Length: 278
Image (tube, rainbow, N blue to C red):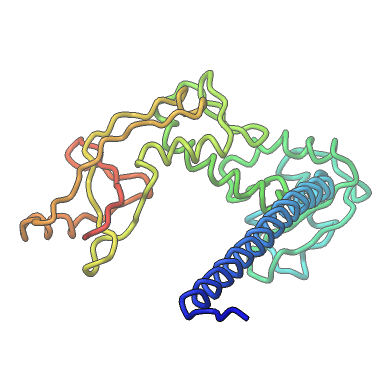
């Protein structure tokens, strides 16, 4: 009977340990792969369900309008009263039968009112005559879903920025039309991210280790065509030095960005980029 030496025993233990570790790694990788595939599948299903819910919400809201600025208390907001107000303000001849239901969206003095019409044509007729509301504090708008409101907020924000430099600029069907360009909300966000280098911070320096605000003076405008093709837009940034003079640090700390996209000072446009102190 042959004896097993200590070195042979240690070698066998080492082989067994390596085998167990390799098996554990293989099992963990298989579990990770299965979980990743399951997550991807669930994300796709969730996206499909969200799209279906969005479609249903838009269908339910397609005949609705929201009225802001009506000076009436909640008990006075009745179908007959709203019908009369719309007729007087918009020079229409609506009847109570054309209104399906009315809801008060809150209990404030000038509570927004949601009006459900029985047909889309009646709603469009009301919106078409909204030009008669000029000079009043009353606003009539579509009854939008949460997704539509978020999209419109993004488009309106960009509309205000470019309106002064564009001949034609308006929002239609969740798109922003600027002269001959048609932009979606995703393209607007990508365009804005490219303008500020993709990293925006709205706070001044507070303590060591926190992100610091650096100023980029007159950065080159991003190329919209390249952006749509997926190419990266180059934005020149001012790299901070580890030994920044105290006076310059105080100057940087005094900068308070006025908007998300930048501020104007002495006819020079400044944009913000993100850098981390080391």
